Length: 84
Figure 1 (cartoon, one colour):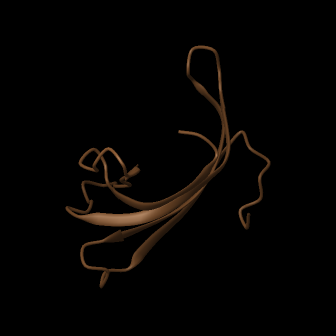
Figure 2 (cartoon, rainbow, N blue to C red; figure 1 turned 90 degrees about the vertical axis):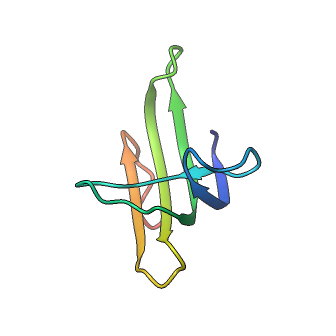
């Protein structure tokens, strides 16, 4: 992964090689089929591939799109504003 926009993401780890993978779940709930998109604004890794800084905004939509969207704004050791 690198800084950039990832459109047409599908459920990880079942996406094909040309698409980005995406899956947010919790409390034993998730989506069987999903699609969405995300944008990485900042990504810094250490020499042993540990994430040092991360800023990403994402949208995940379950099923046919009739379900509500899940929007997330993730910041880890990052000063990138949420409205980026």
